[in-house]
Length: 270
Ligand SMILES: Nc1ncnc2c1ncn2[C@@H]1O[C@H](COP(=O)(O)OP(=O)(O)OP(=O)(O)O)[C@@H](O)[C@H]1O
Image 1: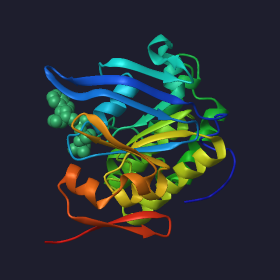
Image 2 (image 1 turned 180 degrees about the vertical axis):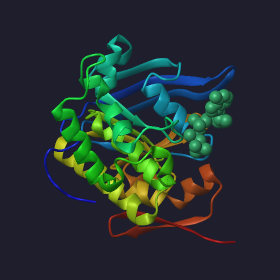
Image 3 (image 1 turned 90 degrees about the vertical axis):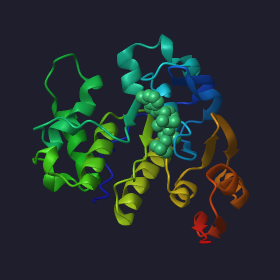
C-alpha cells in the first residue's frame, strides 16, 4: 500500500458534526433502537460496539436515511431529512457489511461509482475523477488488480474495494460497517491506519461498527456500547471497555489491559 500524500482521497475540506437525536427504529413491530442519542464531532471517530443483534447496522443505516426511523439526524446542525439526496450522498459515504457487488464490473469501474454524486447526471468520469479513483485504489493496495472483475478478487480484496468506493466519494462523514471483518491483521491495520490518516489530515468524521474491541479501542477516540436498544455506555475507550461491561452486555469473560495504543481485550477461558 503506497503512502503517496496527494491527491488525498478524503480531501474534502473537513468533516461534519453528526448529531443523532432520539433515534428509534425497528422492523415491523420489533423495536431495535430506542431513542438513541449520540454526537460525533468533526474529525471524531466513534466506534459503535455491542453484541450480535444489538442494532449497530440498523443504527448506521438509519443515520444514512436508508432505514425508516423516528427522531432526527443532523449534519452541522442541519436535519438530513431536509437535505437534497445528492447533497446527502456527497456528505456521507457508506461501506456496508454485506455489499451487493455488481456482476462483470472491474474494481476500477466499481470504485468510480463513488464519484457519481460529484458529477453531472449521466456525465462520463472526468480526469479529476480518474485521479481520485487511481489514488484510492493505490492507497488500498488494489492498483495492480484495478482492471480485474470484482468477482475474481478475494473476500478481503473485495472488502477493500468497497471501502475504496466509499473513500472515492470524498465524503465529510464515513460510515463503516465492520470494515475489517474479512481482512487479515496486516490489511486490517492498513485500512484503519488510512481512515485514521484521513480523519487527522482532513477532519473526516468516522462512525464505524467493529467487533474487534481491541482494534475499536485503538483507533476510535470514542466508543458507544449498544445494548437492549439503548446506549449503555459512551466515552473514551478506556472508560467503556471494562471487564464488567463485557460480562454484563456480551456475557463474555475477558480481562482488559492497558496496551501501548489503547485498551486490549483478552478473552479468558473457563
Ligand atoms: N430485515 C430485517 N427484518 C427483521 N429483523 C431484522 C432485519 N434486519 C435486522 N433485523 C433484526 O434487528 C436486530 C438488529 O440487527 P442489526 O443487524 O442492526 O444488529 P447488529 O448489532 O449490527 O448485529 P451483528 O453484530 O450480528 O452484525 C437483530 O435482532 C436482527 O435480527
